Image 1 (cartoon, rainbow, N blue to C red):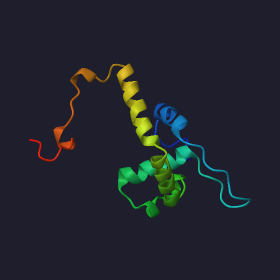
Image 2: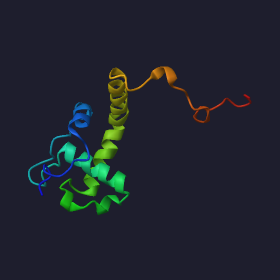
Image 3: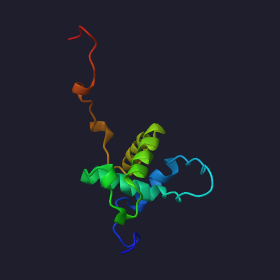
Length: 120
């Protein structure tokens, strides 16, 4: 079964929000080597590992999403580039615009807010 026929972990709508946030990859260092894995395929590999809990090196080749090392490097690079924070904000904006979120009922968990020393 080809990848296009398999069920994707990332639907087209979410990919449409994420794709513009991904920074361009640096150009290849020279001739030869393996062709780069597409960003969407790398994301599928990242999500597979995070959903299943398998080790990065155990990412199945049959998925066609590259190696676990490639997926891990992309995850790390996108984290450094702030992709996940910007995606989170975009998803919240989309949900807010479609009136799925009711911001009037939001609260802050006091456990996650650090108190100053000596404050009661």
